[in-house]
Image (spheres, rainbow, N blue to C red):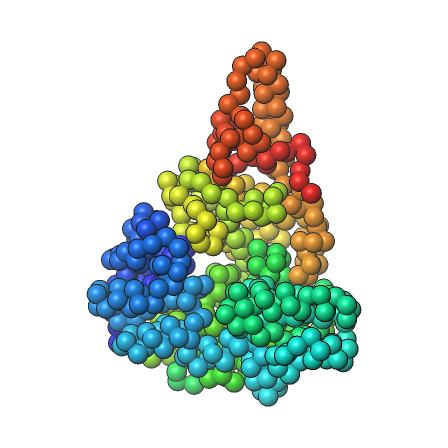
Length: 511
């Protein structure tokens, strides 16, 4: 049906799709903005087309330029990856209208699940449990107040037109609901161009568990088990694992059947994820992500499947090539999202050039990345740099393997989340598998003291050196706490550890 795919994305997911194309014997076309000219996805693809600009709006969100690039290179299909236009029904329709195969679900399914209130109603009609809440968007605070009483406080306002934490506000009483209503409406309008909000009961400490599904055009829909995604910050996931520490075979079968029912209710096709909030013995539909997820590798490792290749096969009209045999997941997998963010400064974005890169290797270690040494990391796009994934026979062995892989990993030139992940892999609640979506707020120590033990002597030695230089009247070259350069490293920071930025102002961590 098609022999060449244009990848309408960047970074590690673009690299991931290129690898899948190569194994299937298909050609790949990368697109890139002005600031991505020398990034790995551009150099790895068979062809590359410049989109111009630096902002996402000028490049990866420019539908006209993307379709023009696909036409110019005679690509037969477009893979949207995740983020950007991946869940944009208009883009799916435009691609198909221009004669390209869209590697993803039908536009109707994207629309059905993209509108959160419509999705709730559809799921209720299909017998999928949903969190108690309003039947539709709320026109005013006067309409919201009696519904909140009926549902029971605390409640949460959510944007009807999108997710990712935008337009979400929690209220514990009527006064707080009145104070946050307009700000939720305003943020929803700014983020999605849609100011509709709806209301749900707020679950105080649920787990976030999602099910991977696959559906082909021949009528087959299956699930591939669950992923535990509860460790997140502001609704952005940080660590994922599969299987979940709290899902037994009976619960897996029950939730998996509901996930399949949810996908069939919108006549889904391709790979997708049905997300649930689990509160004790109860679970509720949260949303459906109509694309491949960032955390898809943990499912691939325990199930022995290539989900991106399955997406491509399904788009070509083929049947799902993987058949569930009724056995439990093979082993345990964990993924850490490695981002250009400083966990000691509220995960503030970090910029700079990747000046040193050491990638972990060995049995059961996988590295999905969109960076290489010499690449500049700016503020134009999502800060995700790479994903470090491990697979082992048991959860305990997977944690030990991740500890070792994180200790081996070095990314120099900018702050990253590596120290945070190292701290999580030592934390007692995580080790016991006893955590919820409130994990980060319940463990503030993870973002206050993430200096690995093996760096402390070096940091102390650097402090002594600085004091001696100050007494001798020698210049340290450091004018400010950040080394005198926004987003950069000072000479003494490189001396302490040339691979990884030490903790800024380590003697007095920020509150």
